[in-house]
Image (cartoon, rainbow, N blue to C red):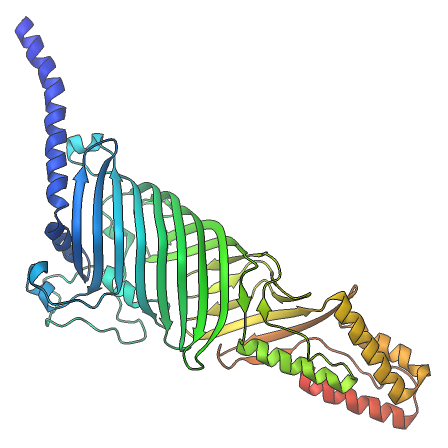
Length: 459
């Protein structure tokens, strides 16, 4: 009887250890560089290369991968050629280092439960199509099945995103519960085909925490928390010029899958702080706004020195909702330039893929600039009309364009981002009917006002 008890006790101790060893060696085999490449290519529509990988047993157990590169699927994948014998690839994405921390005890049952993922120095270069999809999406769609024709050539996107595959939550084998996904020093270059612009994201740091995805219950389990920081630059390829540089950090909430369709379609609700080392310059919208402001010279106001571009003079904040197709402001975004402000109003939106937008923009002049504008209008009116009617006319002119002590002008910009339709929304009103003035004076002021309104306020 004593021997049976000892044997049972030994089994309780030894069997889990055996399971742990089997699980470890199974993971070690899976982590072999060639096996990793094969499994990635069996799962996704891509070609992969891995320089090195290994597993270290501990608490947690860690799988480390160095030099992972992803490229369009090609003939060497279809023919099953070992990666050491393949021709050079045309990389779309590369990752210097990836570490997966796995819970050790589930290895007893040969189950692989990931606690944390760390990704260092990823680099992605992709094209953005009109529907918001990208060439990177082509890589992560499911691999072709035996029923899918495979001519031995990499499939080329049509250029509108319609041929790109869709990843669905139903393809996940198990619910995903992940402590942290960290991305350090990411660099992304996105070429937006329709607007002929590039968006460059550098020095990007992303921390996703509390990742909770259950493919069978996406309404309640389809979320992650986000913290991020990055530098973003936007360039016009056609004009060979930079539109803006933004340095920011912020946080938000991510919904990875569309809960109705189950498709991978990340949406983000975020709040960010844009740092004062950011700057904005030469946007077509600002060009048009400055041209409209210059027409205030018809009332004697010289605003040539007003800058609607340059360095941000202080930190500023904003919130927005973003998806593949659209970015929409959920708060006013106040851009401080010198002493003045440009405000991108709440509700403004942009669809970069379709090269479309609808912005409501407010220019808020400083107190100093407002006083200068009032003085110049006053001098102009007195020169045209004399001291008597000049004061009431000036008061009427500024009644609709001042809020408190500030000159405030609103604009709307929509359509093509490179060639926007810009209109001023701030009205002056009927200048000619303000006072019972001599006909000649009324005609002159009305002519000047109409000329201004036609160019500046779209009357």
